[in-house]
Structure formats: structure tokens, C-alpha cells
Image 1 (cartoon, rainbow, N blue to C red):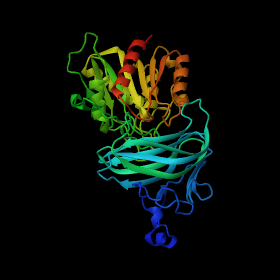
Image 2 (image 1 turned 60 degrees about the horizontal axis):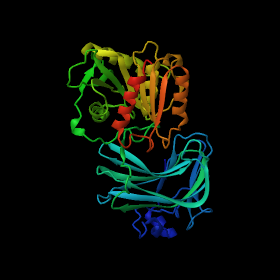
Image 3 (image 1 turned 60 degrees about the vertical axis):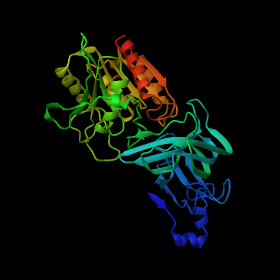
Length: 442
């Protein structure tokens, strides 16, 4: 990590103290024009960029003053992102921030001004501005200096605010005069920040705020066969089982797949499903402490320390639920988002799997890491994905097309807002489950 914060003596020596201070227009950022620094701009943090990415201060091409931030990526991929960040203690008076910057772009495909929040065991982020090809078929953008900005709500629980200038896709851009100014309220229709649970690539915004939280049932924590590594949370409706048995939805949360997602999954059980559903939320076993660990390892994407695959775990959950309740075998589905997506595909495609359909959101699709796709015949796949997601649309499009060719019913449903649950996640999930009911087995 290259963290460059000039000392007071150094600032005085080069006359940079005034440049590092917020400007009189209430910009809360220091060194917003990248005026000070050598290769790295003072007051900003730049993590060691991945191969094919260069991020540095530039004193040749500027919009104003004597500096700018140059971000360039030659690698033909969109992950991981890289950039420069500045973190501040949140002032309680900050209820929204207007974040903007002047940008010069040369064949830029994807850059963002990202606003990140952290607080008591919570994290969130929201893009204030997007620079690049908004849709999969759009060409990269090239333009002279242009101002981008947006207003982002600051959640009440936030204690830290981070402003990030990030490059995701190939191209080059210069960024200058970055500003973050407290304002009274977000613009009408602005999307509030969504809590973040994922520490890795398939990240931001996994859990969404939920109306009707008081209606969320408290799940029953269950350990299978006294094996502490096989735990799940069971949500059972208060009504009696239908004649053919309950319908069953298995959930593989994104992020770290931990029990912290239980409040959200409980609200899914209460608000997002048709009648007569039992919901079983798997709790991801922690096979490794590594930051880049595979949250839901599978037969073809294993963790060297795992005692069993996610496919086996899910099948054990289904068997355990069946011992407790009458289950309708025609209506067993799986919901997985972000890091839970690949394992949801894999479990549904496992030979002899009782899962009839999968709802996969904001995730990658890598058939080389899945069972043979011919197992998709007669099953259904409802795929939720945002064109603004850092995961390119080619992944869900490939899933839709390949699984359909293998004999599955498929539907790709786009939504706005980028990676994470936005707007009304319960309506999105309900629509997907209802579609699965109508199309699985047909």
C-alpha cells in the first residue's frame, strides 16, 4: 500500500499547506486538484495497482493548476478495480454529499466516482458518477475535460466516508478538481447507499434496506448431524403445510455468506415469496482466513481445506429439511447472489440434483467450472443483473444463452443501480421465484 500523506514540515517547505486544505466552497477533500506530491498525490491513498494498470500524479495534462491524476488500464478486463482514495471521519451534519470531478477521457470504458461508508459492522458504497460505455455495445468514450457529478445520501450509521476515484475497464483518463461537498439532501430519485457485505471481487451492496422489517420472522438455527461446519437458518411459515407439502427455497448469500445476512433473508421469507415457502439459508463454512478465499467452494472450484463441497452441503440441507417438513419436490429452488451465484449454478446442475430452478443475481458464469450443462435440460434459470455492475453483462448473457441451448428455460432480467440489491429487492426476488414456478420442468 502506498500511502502518501505529507508532513506538516514538508507542506510548509513547498508551500503546499494551503493546497492541501479544503477549499472555501466547503469541499471536504484535501489536495482535491492533485497539486501536491511527486508520483503519488499527497493526502490520497493508492493501493499497488494490478498488472496492466498505472495510476500516478501528472503535472503535464491538467484542467487547472499544476496537477491531475492519470489512470490508465491496458488489461482487457473489468476486475479488480484500482484507484485513489481519501477517507474522512464523518461529520454528523453530513446527510448527503455532492461528489464531482473534471475528467479527460481517451477510449475509457469504465471509471467511477465511488463513495464508500463504514460504521458499526456495516459497510456500503454508491457510485456518484460513471464515466465510460454505459451499455455493453457502447463504444469507449473519448472527450476533453468534462465535469461529472452526483449526489449520494450518507447513511446515519456511517462513521467514515471514503471518496474513491476508480478505474475498472481498459482506457485512460485524467481526473482533476475532485470535490465532495455536504448538501442538505440527495436529488429526487437518488438511490440510498446499500450495506455491503462482500470483502472481495463480487462485492458491493449485498444487503438492501428493507421495509416491513418488523414482519421478518426469526429463523431457527440448525446444525446438521452435530457438524458445526454444516449450519443453516430455517424460516418456516406459520400456516400449515399444503396438501403437496411446502415449497423450498435454499439461499446462498453473497459476500462472506455468514449468518449476518439472516435479517435480510428473513425479510425475503416474509416479503418476497408466494405462499407456502420454507426458506433455508446456508451459512458458509470458513475453510480459510485468506481475504481472497472462495466463499462457496464447489467440486470444480475447491478450497484445499474444505471437508465438503457446497453442492454436498446444499443437498444435506435439503435432506435435513425434508426430515422436518413435508416438501413438494416439484418446487425446490435456489437463490444465490454475488459470491453465491457460481455455487447456485453448480448445485442446480449437479447430476441428480432435486433443485428445479435457480435465481442467480449479480454474478459471474464460468461453464468450465461447472458440471456438464446438459444437466440443465428441463430446469429453469432466472438471472438478475445490472448493466452498471462491475461484472460485465457478457457473463449473464452467456449463462442465458448456453443454458437455453442445453435445454433449460432461461430469462435474463436487467435492473438499474450496479452491483447490489437496489430499489425493491423483494419485488425483484418475487418476480424471479414466480417465473421459476411457471417454467421449471417445462
